[in-house]
Image (cartoon, rainbow, N blue to C red; front, side, top):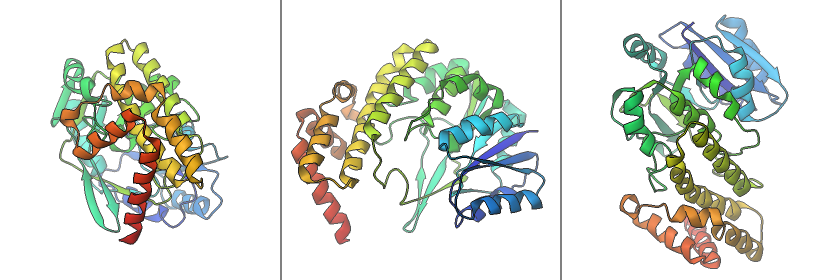
Length: 343
């Protein structure tokens, strides 16, 4: 079997049908679809069962709730039978020619990994999440030379790497994913896809990049981690960073550790925004922001930033972080929040 598509499912009754329709409409038929229900409490399990009843390529697993990472890195890979494995989130959808174009590239190049772009879809329209790597095939030497120096972070918050580390814009050989599953770490709240992509690329002998193709539609979700408060998010980011460093050491690429350190700056910015979404008073919010921006991990990360590839807004944020001005950052975020609400 050529492909396995893993779809983690959790309480997406209203959005799951479009996802399933897009996968069942694929023009390339040699694939299986694994729906891994992570303990949903709405009508999602029934939708999954109905899909499996109408299409023999669809299999369903119902399990207790353990979180996204466990859903695709554990149960999904255990059951996958395809030569290549990819993942589609249950509130997103894909174009009907996704698997056909991937199969065409595999037939010609036989790469370990295939990378493509994705587009973000919101009520305001669509935007392309562009890939900043050349189109085409890369052997191991070319991966080392062209991909690894910008795989994680080039010293910026926006446009920080050659292609997004998300699992949803890639298919990888199942054997490669299984070899690297030991690097998966439970308990990561955000960025767990890094532990899918980073060891995968480090262990790959070849990859193929579609630099100007965006077959994956990522649905803007106001309930996602980018828009809702999460407890201990900063601690989770620090844990992720340490795990990424251990992966780099395991593969003998310690020279990439500064990229992980640079990525800490983006994680700090996300964590500050997370504090602002919490129901805290000014004093507690400022205390938490101060804890983030004065941490040694962030201080080290700031030394890795490259102003030449950063926007004016990014450079301003770096200055505020370096100065440790938690109160100023808090006030600026409050003003930004009020300005957004007024529109």
